Image 1 (cartoon, one colour):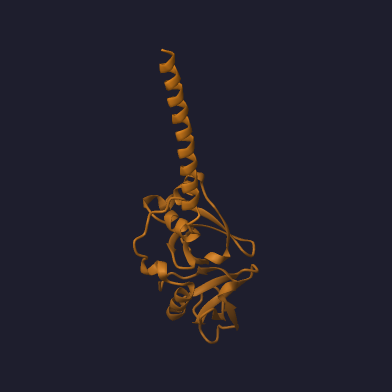
Image 2: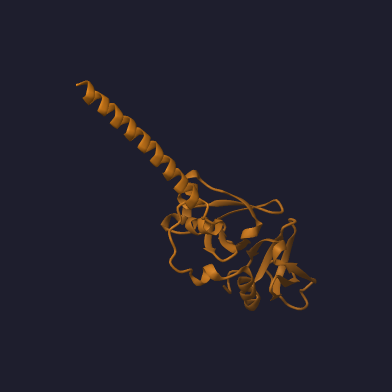
Length: 200
């Protein structure tokens, strides 16, 4: 009888140590998995699924700007957003200081779905998107990383900057309405708010 109890105690002790060791290994595996998850993957997950209409995020941006919106698209180095007022915008990933969200969404975004092949949108850089806005002559507002708002139309977008014709918000770009021009480096863009969706 004593030997039976002795072996049972040994088995219980072995099982407890095995479970503790397995828990440590699981924790390390989870840490390793999380170390490979990028911000754009988490934002992609937050923009995915049927419940995205309720997933409003608070983007704190450089230049002390805050944008409350849901994710509509994620590119190589930018995120497309739609505000509650149905205004669309583009936020460079480098301009994001923090993202406020519900705890459940935070946990959900930490387990992104595996993507076999990146879509065209996910491969587009911010330069590509800004060149398309220039081609379409879309009036917009650029909030810079210093907090300044520049309204106008993009005339050209280069490799790392754009030419902006300044004019009143919402009005079309006409030579007599342009009141100045700016060269804006992509690195100085806090976010781009699209003022007219008519031509998108």
